[in-house]
Image (cartoon, rainbow, N blue to C red):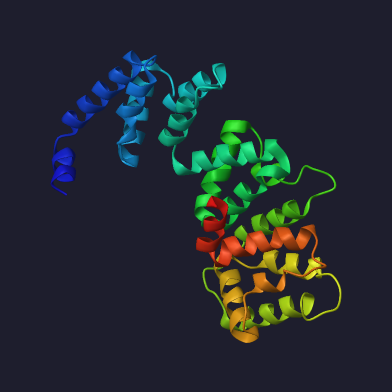
Length: 259
């Protein structure tokens, strides 16, 4: 707190420190371990200020220069890591999303995590960063493959749900949706009714969907994810199971990813 007060009352000192850091970064560009040490312990605010100062001093974006250095030497992972580190969170998400799209179905879970784990306001910043950096629209790029994969259909539905800015959540709607999910899945004979699931994903916000999953467990005595583990389950059920686990039990989802 004292440090923050001191920096706030001494902007010239703060600027001098950032300029010194930028000169150190610029002068030690070929010594990557030193470069990493110069950036590793900076806070998010300090990184943004250093990045702005670097642009003012050298006319170059620090993140872009790090990415360009990695591109010329792909084996040099330090530059790639540092580039992601100095980016704002929404910029980082935009780069991760682009990589996921370019790599195809092998990286679909990274997109699921972005669309489920971010608030609508955060996702909007990511979409804007994506458009600015890649001259393309994220929501369109996730659906360019024909025919669309199950993950794509789920992602498109989640993208649409973010455009519905309903701050309030309804217990009544959650109970009704839980019953519809049951009737479309384990309460019916045969494969899951994808159209009903996608309709619910499209029309409800992430907080509303979380409440629906909570109601499902309360009404039927087990997680909705468990109902998707059938011998007859296909690609859609498998994709939906990953998305719902990320949404409702993220700790279990990420624990399994790490394992």
